[in-house]
Length: 317
Picture 1: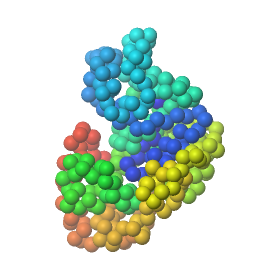
Picture 2 (picture 1 turned 60 degrees about the vertical axis):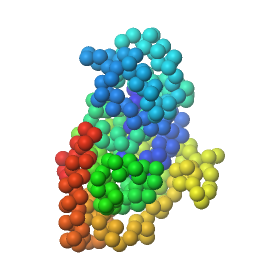
Picture 3 (picture 1 turned 120 degrees about the horizontal axis):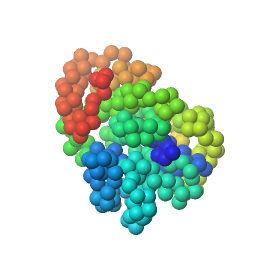
């Protein structure tokens, strides 16, 4: 049964907000981001040729900076292998999630790692009945957030050679890359396994969206989902909305008032087609030829940089 659901989406799309809402549900626990689940499987470190885990995998997980988010100690991992016998990778991870759920008093446990939107096929192969919730946000607002994301600035520079030269166009391609991979993978899944939510409706009508999400997850609606922030909110000007634990708040990013005209021109030259496809109105009906030419040059470099980590480009690129 576990992992029961994966919450995915382009980073900076509001997945933390959705994770907090779902984690507040009485039956579902969603730990903080893992990052290591598909990577460990692809590396096959500590996994035998016939698919069973070994103690080498335990050492690898314990060394991972995100594994501690599950709060599972070495002794518990060793006990799990000792008592359960030979475990496949999928069953081993399921057992870890079960253990996390038991501690939280919840029967269902999921995961929120936005980048797993690029790994849906692998995760579906490991857990064919796991559900996927894909959160989509207007890419222009995602761009505003990503280009001001100081903590990840060096990561973007290392990952994408065009970031310093033109972060807006690069961010537009980065958003397109994530969203299209999620859309294409979701189209291959049954309707009871894949569900899309728009960030904009989640923050303007959270109750309605949470009710629909609960129906997809096959659990009763829990009003506590709307009160996830109570007792945690810390209003302070220097804190981000995430760190301040704000309730659903529309307008935290608004490209209409916060994105300069030149940046809007560049973004829509690179990602305007996808915006329209998703039902987001363009701010500029027709990008200038100069912006389209610039996009073509940067996209050529992006096509080389993006798959460098073994993740493909979307079919529609």
